[in-house]
Length: 183
Image 1 (cartoon, rainbow, N blue to C red):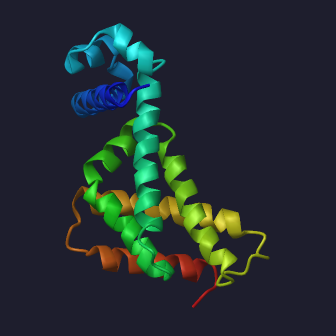
Image 2 (cartoon, one colour; image 1 turned 60 degrees about the vertical axis):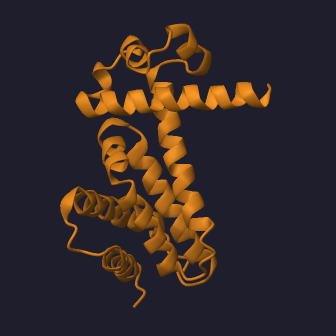
């Protein structure tokens, strides 16, 4: 594939992603057809199918790109302190709040993927020895805390802007530590 073809493919995929995102804002994902996406993108169905199996494949790509960008934001920050990394994580969610909220509402697997991301963040703390890895209830505790934290984040992103990113990160961070017996 030449550079020009690669660039054209990236642009085409971007147009399809933007079209699906716009349509999801107007109506639920279950009501969106490939025809509607193509019409909004001003592209042919054959072009769509050259890149995706169906509209849900396109949605998965949007989710995956969001999560890759989230991970990259945290890992490229070169912050050693977990609290600062977590603040960076929440900052990304806040900056991309409308897409985060849309994916939480429309993408069936996105909530689980975000919780798995929280697991990976917390695994870093476990590996560093801050958390006792012998706790047989660690995973259950983390699911509980992650689910509650996710709901709190959704509400925060939807409009509780009086709480700063730093304060929200600190609140969740302390809650995680309390439930895991770390003071």
